[in-house]
Length: 179
Length: 314
Image 1 (cartoon, rainbow over the protein chains, first blue to last red):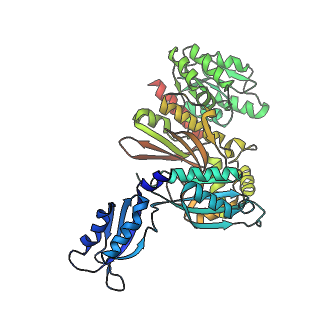
Image 2 (image 1 turned 30 degrees about the horizontal axis):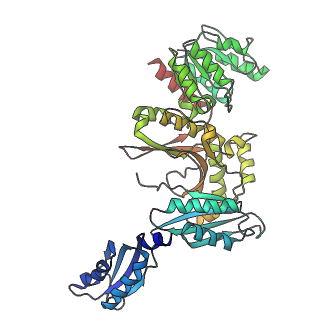
Image 3 (image 1 turned 180 degrees about the vertical axis):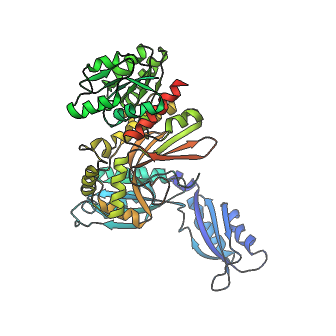
């Protein structure tokens, strides 16, 4: 089990600041590839500058979780300014409602259970309990999930909600406007 | 064509009333306790006036309408679950007499689709049921035209009462009970609205869609159904704060049949308001098709019934 978790590649995002000089981007990407990272996308906004006059670059990459720290160290060793690493490994978000005795059934525990059972992160919470905390209330949650995992996340929420006799109003997964 | 109409509720009455406009004759009209039968065509206005005065459409027995002379039987008795009787028996009798059947009653096609198709195969008559899904909206004939195999999924808002309640709750910040009472006063919701608000009606329509898309195999028992009755107003407020709203959405997809309240974008295609219905079809080669319009009501449903009758006479 722990072997699987450390070798199955995951997506990570690193945000870098590069000096506007020839060869800088290549210099920043080499340590990633050299250390077993698979580049997924590079957002290189040449027109926009950071307050320090550097160019922000966002790199999405995939690697086994065990290798990610090595990649970040290698980038720093190569003199690349890494401003954020790994914090945005979640590519999709799901918004849903929980309805029922949301507060009385220990909202805090509900959220932790959802996070631990779904491998998602609760990034937004809005609660409405007009009748007081002991009455039927509603909560709106935004969960950030890994790309392609939102169905699993919703299934995990349903399980937790069922245990606590809460009703889930799920999003319609089909995105609007695709037609 | 000569039509025998079973059921003299809003739909049956409207079909009888409008049949003349479409150049069809009504040779029989029955309610649950009586019937008016005339091989040369009954006087519809007379029969309906009698129904208003005495509660009976004529002096004959309901069974006489089933035995009358007709080309197509219009089955517009109330939808029943499980064995779908007496509607299913009416369809059987007509098919065994090699007559056509046009259904407004959802029971037989939602609950006993495969048996119905078997009966149809042995009959000279055929069965049509456009009116059972989405009222006046041509959902089933569109699926038929495109070919069921070219459509991967259908979803939408299929119950006007539930949609009225949800859209009023969201727009006015009112509670469920208040809006429901209002809907009942307006005649949008029936005295017993449970079929509509607990999702059963939408689930029947989705079971019919699944049967049409998959050539049978579905009934209400296969549907995962959740209603809107225990949804508090604050849930809709929370949804609105985030640019979303809640709609009772029915789905017939390769994963199965499912009905339940779902979060949808507030200004999205599926967030129709009031009693309006909408059906989205996912096509293989033509993207998404949105069909919307009036999903219930006497003349609306009768329009779909008479469109089916016209298809039969071609």
